[in-house]
Every structure is written in structure tokens, then in C-alpha cells.
Length: 116
Image 1 (cartoon, helix red, strand yellow):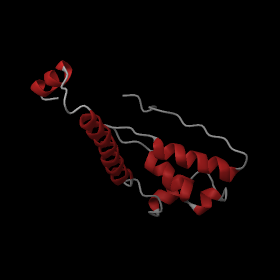
Image 2 (image 1 turned 90 degrees about the vertical axis):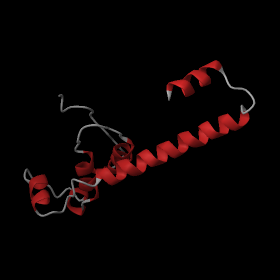
Image 3 (image 1 turned 60 degrees about the vertical axis):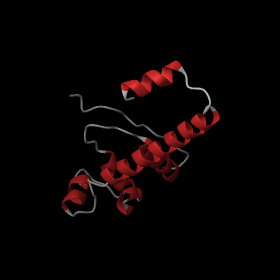
Image 4 (image 1 turned 90 degrees about the horizontal axis):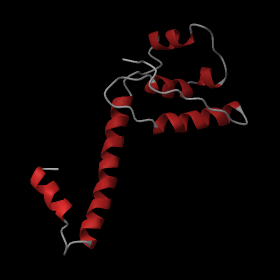
């Protein structure tokens, strides 16, 4: 297991701009099967102290102990993202099927027989 699944580096014209870009990028990450620190980083980006550059070496530890950073937030976000992705794929599939309703390709028949 390699704990370094992805690395995020952002830059911006200002700290606020860089934080906005980091927030957007972190929300777009989708990692399945292992826990990540993405929810922690999203909470940290929203923390007023972090945004004001009020940090020290024990910043994260102190916030976690105080309950200010919620490490379980990603489960709900992941479920919502999965439902939205499924809905979008279903719309595309339904539109394609509606436009091709009179013809069924051999590939489609094979997939149906295979339970795909």
C-alpha cells in the first residue's frame, strides 16, 4: 500500500485564490477503496485560522483534538458524487437507447446475456 496516491499543488495570484483552487481540486478528487486525508484538507481550507495563516507545527493536531476538523465528512460527499455520476450515466444511456430503440447491436445482445 502506497499512502501517496495523489499529490495536489496549487498556486494563485493570492492566498485566497490559491485556497479557492485547492478547494475546487480537492472536491473533484475521487479515490475509492481507501481512506484519504481529502476531507481533512477540505475542512482545513474552511478553517478561519488556516485562511488567516494563523498556523504552527501543532495546528492540525490541535484542531483534531478540539473536534474542529471532521475527518468523516467524505463518506456523505462520496455517496452524493456516486449518485450524481450514476444519474448522469443513466441519462446518457437512456438518451442513446431512445435514439436507437429499433436496432439492437450484437454487442448489446451479448452484454444483456452476460448480465452486464
